[in-house]
Image (cartoon, rainbow, N blue to C red; front, side, top):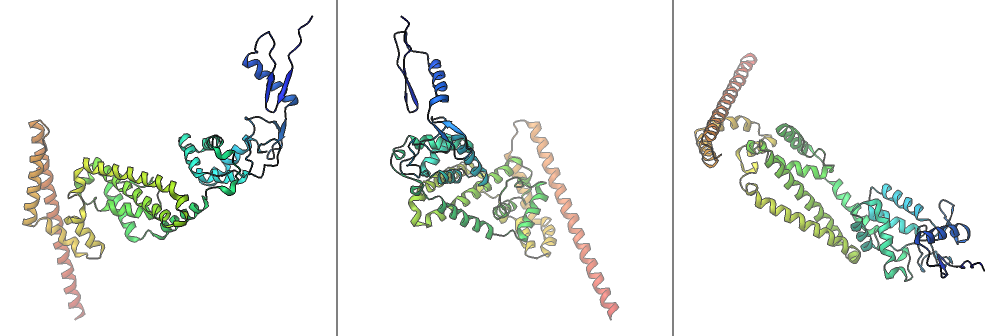
Length: 398
């Protein structure tokens, strides 16, 4: 008598096969049977976005929440396929300047899904910050939470739009700080001294660049620093880190002042405060490793720095007195002592190299003094020429 084929029983998305005494079919065989039956008799949904009919299974559709607008659908699914939702999320992501939180928020609003800021930030972490992967992680984490079985909808979401208004306030603060003539002069002086603009590729707005230029220009009058690429890069790194901390302070201040939103902002405040702490620790380490940063490196307290500041305020005669000051006996004594200190404190571990360095320092010092003398003579001649022209003009008019 021929063996009867085991019956197949349908139960929603699962196929239960009654196993006879011939043994359990392989997983591959079961999958083939599921797909085959699905194509013929499984329950299907028409995606409301692209209009095609797909089999109801976890690969095609998300479960809906009993408190959402989809609660009346007997199949318990969101009637938009996962592929269309993925494209929807990507569109929001690119339309909102890669703001992941905003993209997830808008996608949840479109589908009447509760937006949970903490879950979203957890999904960003799981996706390693890769925006395109965040939505899948968000839905996976949301599905594992108790909230998915409790009635809720987008109306129960964390309010990210209030944070958007804070971003508007931050942007307003940035735009209120204008790049003026003094900032342009600082930028020009830096490029002239270094030969390039170290902040050109930073992508920062002018409201932040002006502070970076103002900070760096106070160092570039020191020729020893300008000729040392390590020191310049260290200073640029310190200035950039200080700028990041300053921006975090602004944002933290805006979030903290809105007491009504304190609960909604708490997660973001915590993240920003943690980031600020890390940057401050990095800055402290940099200062410890580079003690010269906290010593007499700022040209603001130096002769050249003071002259530059006076010239900016229109005291043109400072330019003249600058070169006269360089060859004054008292200044010469200071320079000689500085030169001697440099030679005594630098040791290359080789007597011949030390001697070469000493000779080079003396040659540079002597040449600098000669240049200052020539400039001083040039200034004296210019003064005599002005006096001569002034006297002749008086005689001609008389």
